Length: 284
Image (tube, rainbow, N blue to C red; front, side, top):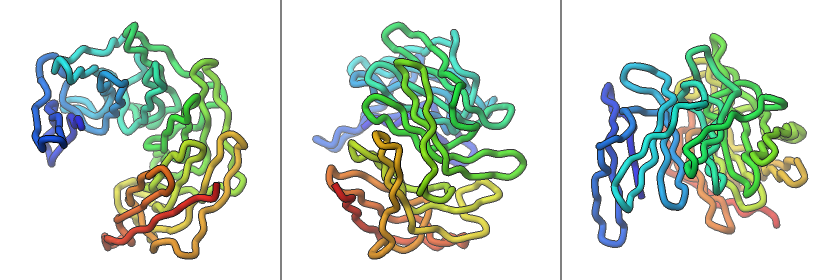
C-alpha cells in the first residue's frame, strides 16, 4: 500500500510511505523530485507506478502538476505540463489500462467540466471532449467500467452548493460522452458510498442537502436509499429499503466479489456517528 501527500491542520505534505503487510513494515517514499506538497489530489495505480496529479497546495488552492512514483526504484518522474488540464482540486481520476483520465473539480473560476487523458508511456496529455459532457461539478463518483469512465453525481458551487443525480459515460478511444439516464436514478446527494461490481455501479446512502459544502449534512440527516446502475442498458433500479442499515452519510463501501459492505458514517447534521453497517447482495 502506498500513501502520499495530504494535510493535517495547517500542514500539507509531500512525503509518503510504502506499507508491506507481509512483514508489517513501512518504508518512506523518496522526496527527491517529488511533486510539491498538496492535498485534495488524485492518485491511480498503473501496474508499475503510482501517478498523482492536481490538488491544493501551499501557495495555490489549485494545481496542475503531478508525478509518477516507481516503488521498485523509489524514484519520482514529473508529469508534463504541456497540454495538461487547467489547475484544479477535488477532481476525480481513473486508470484505463493505458491512460490516467482526470475530470471535473474545483478551479479558480468555480467548477469545471473539462478533463484530460495522460499517457505515461509518452508523457503526453490530450483533452477530453466537452460535447455531451456532464455539467460542471466537483467530487463526483468516478469508476472505470472496463472500457469507459463512469461519472455520476457531484456538487456545483455557485454561491451555494447544489447536488446532481446526472452523469455520463466517457469513451476515451472515441473521445465521446453519453449521458446516463435519470429515470429511477437516486435523488441528488453527496458523501455516499459507491462500488463497481464488474457489471454495475451501486450507490447507497448520502447527504441530501448541504448549502455550505462541508462534510456535515447541514439542514438534514443522512438517507438510506440507493440505486444500481447498469451501463450496458443505461438503466437504474433502486436498492431495497427493507433490511437496510439506518440513514447515514460519509459511509464507506467495498465490493467483496459478491456483496457490497457499507459501514460507519454520520447519521445526522449534529455529528452523530454510527458503527453499524450492512451487506447488500444485488440480484444477478
